Length: 544
Image (cartoon, rainbow, N blue to C red; front, side):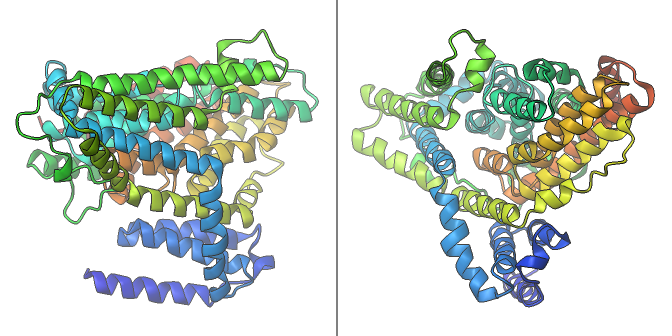
């Protein structure tokens, strides 16, 4: 379809929707509250233009909040939602962290470090399959934070996967599928404190004296979606089998086209300004040292800020998990990314590979490469706030009926969490919304089956991660596209069948099978993993 015709159709559809929208009273906590995220998702899938889709969706939501006036809604889009998204300290931390890391990657590339890493990994990543396994392993090893995982693994492995003609869509899938699914179940991560605190608050308000950390540990065997997502990703990497749109992307990449025709990567790492000068020594440690410092600084910073926070709160004897959970990850990521950038510049200048001026120029080029991703992130955050104001999640939460059979509670919670997370693009927000509802409901049911509480908690976390994993407006999905240099719509479209496989097995073989039989969770995990292996073996096709 010609670009001008696409623009005209979007404009006409938008105007038609805007002038039919209800006012605030009719929109809040009603079916209308689902319209903004549905508009975003529909436009993304129909026209493959994530910027226009998000902008339109925020405008639609702001118009309803402004009483049904399209003009007032457009003004609120600018002076309220975009502005508030940018002045939020956590959001700004993500932008600055990503910008600094982009600058670090640019300096590493210009100094020949990226080429050095590719050459150093050649003994391990000798084939497309081995390269995918190495990427998967790196994602699992960087388990302490999903943002760090996404940006480090994507930026490190992109030149290696490019060398073996692995599609950018496949890289983005591997990166995205080993980020949140790992961080949400890791005992030492930036997630655990948040998760345990939500569980603790819900238990306290329900009058229960159960230990929230013990409940979290008990929920791990029921974390079916994270387990099956990691299993599917590993089997796909090891076997080299794909199906659906990912298979088409891989066939295209093997012919030398790493990106689809007309693709619009969120970050541009192909600039000739970042190619090393002729004769520059391509040393692997010019990349490994800065990246290692980012990882080490993050771990040390998480411990330091967590320990300081607990000491100030009067807690002296605490576990490592408690310390990491109480940390300030956004501040730590800023420290770590700056240290990584500084190390990359110092190494390049000290070896006379780059001058101070050329290092700064490369840094600025790295900043510029992230601009598109920042715009998308800002609009995604704006849409999230629109959904909050319209009480979209509260409306979806009301779908959980009070007369539901207790054994079905985990499965229904998973589906509702997935819907909320997919519509709002936030896994943490989904957990905050559903935990106060699901934990009391599960507590009522524990007299007959104590496992229902643990399974319900796991269903909240797993459903939230699944929805976030698939949503085109999720920040981690956007960051995966950015770090992999992939078109965002292509990433979402190719990843969705794989995520749906893991989610379907989690629901049928995990939560529903548990409700029907009550068999131990570890047996269900083994059966589910076996089904995934068989499915990929029967449906998937190899190229190598």
